[in-house]
Structures are given as C-alpha cells and as structure tokens.
Image (cartoon, rainbow, N blue to C red; front, side, top):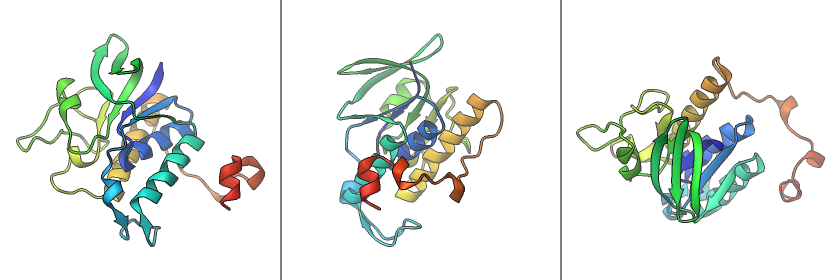
Length: 198
C-alpha cells in the first residue's frame, strides 16, 4: 500500500510528491501528461528567471523521481473509493491502495466529487488552509480550488501545503521540510544523470 497517492502530475502533484517522498512516505503519482505547462513559458516563477514549460516538467519529474516518487506516466485514475483503512484507486493497469489521496487534476473535479468532497456554488472543491477537503485524508490543489487563479507557483505551493499536512499527521507533530547547506549531497552521492548536470 502506498502511503500517498497523487492524482495529477503537474506542478501541484509533483510538489506534493517531492515533499512526501523525500521525507520517507511511499508515494505514487499518476501523471496523464495533460498539464497546462506544455503551453507555458515561466517568467513569473520565483527563483527561475526564464524556462520553457516542457523543460520545467522534465526537471520537476526528474527531481521527484530522484527523491523516491513512483511516477506512473500515462496511467489514468478512473475511480477512487473509501475503504475501511484508506482509499482504493482504480486505473486501467489495476487497483492501488493508499492512506492519503491528493487531487491535482487542474479544473477537473469529477474524482473528488465522486468521493464526496464538498464543492461550492462555483463548482470549486472546498479546502482548508492545508488543502484538506471535507473528506478526511483527501486533499485538493491548484485550479480545482481557485476560481480563475491558475498559476504554476501557486499550484506548487498548494501541493507543498498538502504534503506538509500529511507529514505532520504521520509524524504526530508539526513537520517542517527545511533543508540547510549541510544537507546538500556531494556529487558522488547524486544519481549519475544529476551529477552530470552540475
């Protein structure tokens, strides 16, 4: 059983997966590659002067998988149900169990609504500040929670907020994913492809 199942592999989903996987939670991300980033060029993402959306996605996917995310490219989640001890996700490839679900599917709210997540009058999934929906241990991020406020950097922040709440729940106390220069691995500790890019 995966601890965290993330439906959607854009900035929100990959950000959530990066945080949970690098901090020891078994994490699977289902990515149908339908992100709006394919049409984007980022000049407004803090810390990045200029980057094509395709290149951003390549880097983001590599960063997430390097830190332990099980990235399921092209595998679409077609159903999510509550079970006695978590959730069951159905894809064309099979069924997956998880303790937490993070929805990061842009404006598509079909799956969270089918699970019983409350939506407002504008059809947006209702969440608290930690991105938790009305269904316990289910989170929603990005465009499905924000009316016409669609920005990659905001979506990535939503994913990070969901992940920190999950990590805090798992650890039983407020968790902070804060790295220092001493935490940076040496080149010999990095995967070959990442070390070559240095």
